[in-house]
Length: 291
Length: 116
Image (cartoon, rainbow over all chains, first blue to last red; front, side, top):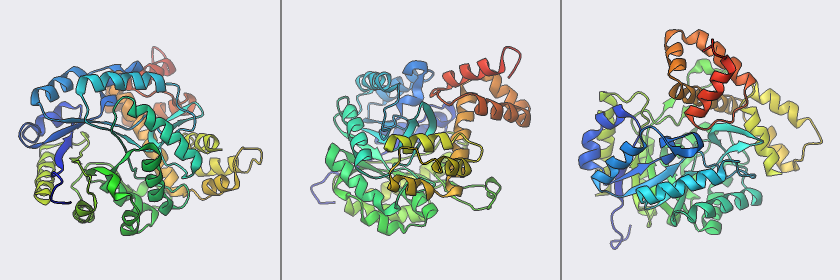
């Protein structure tokens, strides 16, 4: 970072879960410099405000700190946008007005095709057709929140050559005038599972377009899951940030001149007192690295 | 055609044997796929696709349990029996729900008034 650049803010992803909010109360009230909210987790049918929406809005308004928006299931890579697209955009517009997101990020991928939905984004096949689909989708989001970023996923299989992906990200940033949310645990998981060198993958990223970094942990799959008994790293956000991710974070900071925020994530499943202590410890370590 | 690549991948995630299903589909010469798209799909790692399918189904289960208190209670009472019903539901009911309440409505329609 140049000396003129402000220090990136350090925040956490707020989860719509009572235990998460209670166990991490001190982190939320005293330490986090901004919050990331995933509005779709606050919706019910037809993307109407659902359980926890009013409470989350009251919480972040009461705390008075900056808020960013995040999404998982918008499916920006769908060649044919899902039928719910217009309804989803209207809901995001409502949330932008309510929360005042400073920027909005969305997972890059496809979770709707042929009338079916997957519950997580699947990888895209890099190429002109995917580039056009993603660009059109991100433009729709930019009409709501001007500053848009997309997040790299942890894919458990590759579609095309894995090292085509970072240049594809660069092409999206250029064509759509968008930014990259670099999830370092996703990158670590993706490279580990696909047999790609993480450093090589990172070297190919469009670093001046990295707006935000996600830090989290994960776990390994159960050998019983597969007949081959192969174990894959999972992007489960349920553990301490592993050392290779801390190392990647340390190396990323001087390479990302436009980094504005770093967010720690932990899924609410299994949020215990011990998990909250680890989450706070990871937060403190990240803060030490940013100072 | 990208839409066909995506249709095949999304559908594969809802098959019991996703890689075998995908290979059978790719044997159909009439599918609107370029040679590069066909090659990319043929090269999809079987273990990676199988783990993706498991995670997709686990998330659908979690979505249902979030949206339906009776289903959550049934799962807590007898997970094995509930999962057998859930697998039948997944096989029979196309995955279109995005929100817990939508999944719950579809599940209740599947099991009927006495089920769940």
